[in-house]
Amino acid sequence: MLKAGIASHCNEAVFAMHRARLLKRARLSRAADFKKVFEKGVRSSDRYFTILARPNDFEFPRLGLAISKKRAKHAVTRNRLKRLIRESFRHNQHRLCCADFVVIGGQSCAHANNSSLAQSLDKHWQKLEKLCAKS
Image (cartoon, rainbow, N blue to C red; front, side, top):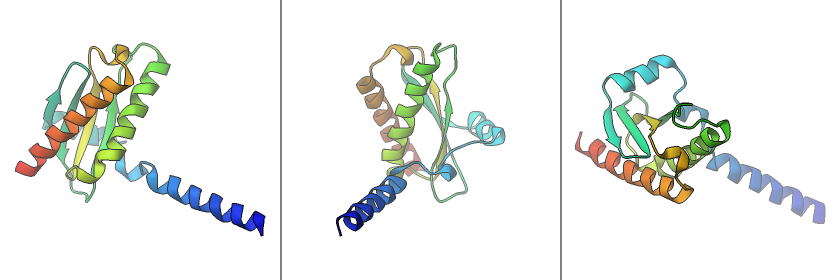
């Protein structure tokens, strides 16, 4: 009886984790998709990030990342930035319009703390949400 209770609890936890992750379909992966956003994207910038957005033909927003070695020299730092960006996008994707977003690392992103980066991303998502509502 006890084992069955633990097993069902684990299955619920796995199901909850699956729902909470960023789905593969919500990621930009093709170079052509990035190119479209870079050509005619709406821009939101600050010293940490530049986010480009362009409406897409899907029923959900998609995210692409462009964190260069020039901005974040160490792989550990680049990976930390990518995790923070994906997590922020995952929490805000329900309120964003159906668009493709590309996040580019800025001058100071590698040296900033996590809370500053999260605040910056929240401001960008709010700004882009308003721009999407206008169009």
